[in-house]
Image 1: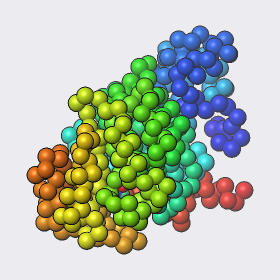
Image 2 (image 1 turned 60 degrees about the horizontal axis):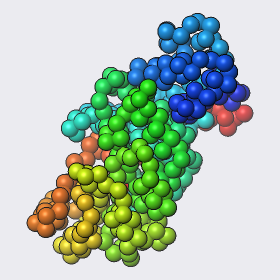
Image 3 (image 1 turned 135 degrees about the horizontal axis):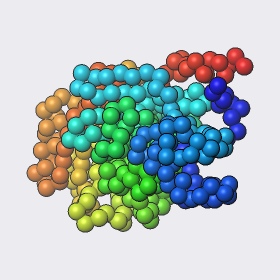
Image 4 (image 1 turned 60 degrees about the vertical axis):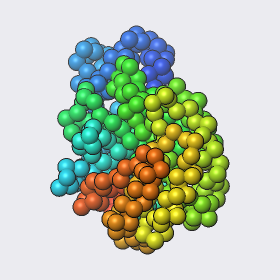
Length: 362
Ligand code: SAH
């Protein structure tokens, strides 16, 4: 019989990095190499229970099952777009809901995962921001999304990219996010190379400085969206605390590897930040940074007061950047028909899970 999540006192195994798991095993007198085996089962083979780990003895599996829980987000709903993009609504152990998106062939297979339930950043054009901040995800919940999506898409053991561009601001949940990346990158587990991971952030500056010193260094994407302090204050409220000028200086100091570049994401909002003057300011702002620009024409949604610019405005903006030698691409929205595109991830408050309804009745 499954043990109720509320009364289950077992330790959560998926939150542990491998050295911590090895230590925990050693404390219980379990040979350390079994920790590596368990990591391999979870990361390389997509297992979700000790029962599947058939090269561990039956006794050991029973012992581990009594001491550890392996939490796996439950798929509450799945929507597939005409373009193959699949959005997963996942239910966590406490009934909270998050979304993760599988984007096939862009050109790689990509999993877009969440780092928080909701988001505190409240960017003016983003639906997740309208939810406000509910809670941080744990390392196991961040890794769990990758584990579930890899299994569901048949990509266990194959190459894929992970982008931290789902719900939440990764640098506002720094420790859990970095711990999750170390678990994903562990050579005994999924062994996901750092170059296959992209962390997208509004630029929480103290955390960005910390990121600069990490051993496991993902690609960096900065959600810029504006070229003046006033404009960015209005669109990305955290700018009032960590301003544009300081963000640009931090990017100049950021250790970018030889052939790499920082991606600057720029949501194009009709008649707000999409004029030729904006484009020229953007060129000047990025001068001296190994940058590439990813233009994101707004994905419109009810409750968002901005509009997507017409294609010729988008082209004009992109051409000004390109003519000045800035590497620029326009992001093709994937999964718009199932509201899986950037900024469209929202778990409606009214949409309660069975577990949430149950918890309320108790
Ligand atoms: N909090 C992080 C990662 C999540 S959002 C960040 O802000 O970078 C991923 C990207 O989608 C960000 O660049 C975000 O600004 C962008 N985005 C948000 N709402 C959008 C919308 N409605 N249309 C297009 N892009 C949007």
